[in-house]
Figure 1 (cartoon, protein in one colour):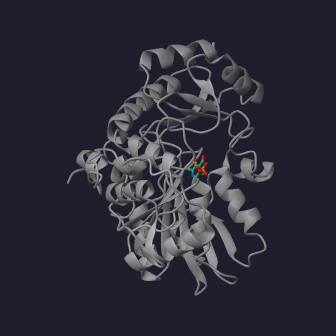
Figure 2 (cartoon, rainbow, N blue to C red; figure 1 turned 180 degrees about the vertical axis):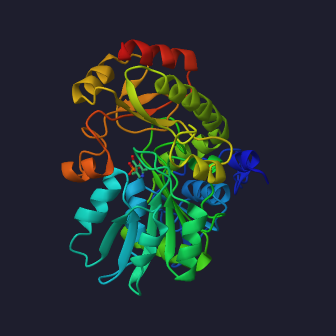
Length: 381
Ligand SMILES: Cc1ncc(COP(=O)(O)O)c(C=O)c1O
């Protein structure tokens, strides 16, 4: 099956009793048993499994080409579940530009866990390999990154992690499985903030893990069941509905993203545009290699003045773009990472990686590109 067909049918079947084409929202915590330990059907308790969540999890596995999907109450709950594979003394190598909440989870929540985190430039493959030792258990990358649109070469990193028998996880939130398939490129686990493009309509908080290996999938399912950060039936239904139009939405996000990036690149008040589709983007060649069919709808830029106040005034003047956290919905959103999504990263760290106070991140939606550009034009003016 090709991707567009998978987005609609992958892992799906009609509901057994009524033939409903969409799985009903099985809004139930528990399932009847005929005798102790003998449920009527295959389900017992919704923290372990629920038919609506199962339908979503099967769809997730299908579109990411994995063997098992797991749906969580948020992207961070998914990442937290993955981290439970590791123990004191283990080391994790992560990319040096990450979503602020992921960084906060690694550095604050797991601070006293005894797990050591390294944050490195994943494009310096030599430097990265020097950090690997017998305690290294996981490599974690986000590509493209939030908000600086840095890329990591998934296939090249996978060759190294395979050689050293280290797990390799990719946060595929920005690219979506429509554009990029980390498991096909050699990663072991894909993570999503399904809140974003998978849900696609800014109406749900959800997360996902998709795993390539059955044993690891079972182990993670056990951890999910035992800790309970699962996605509810209604939210599972919403993400599943979102996935059915993922390919259509992402095509338009890419078209609009490219137009917005080009407009900004030629604007006299704009200093630098971070968009992997631009030829002058430092990782454009990697993007062409691993993002098939487009470069996404996320565009970040800075001001010639370098002034924080210019970024703030611009954001206050937007009319079609909404100033809000999050991304990946049908509507265009704008965000000031230093004051909003990445405020949890200490200021010196932010400056070190390039999250400056004049940096603005746009999630370009699927409206008419002309309206979006007019809006940017008036706000920049
Ligand atoms: C790239 C990325 N990963 C993970 C997350 C965390 O996901 P959630 O907000 O669903 O917990 C986000 C949220 O913005 C994100 O942008």
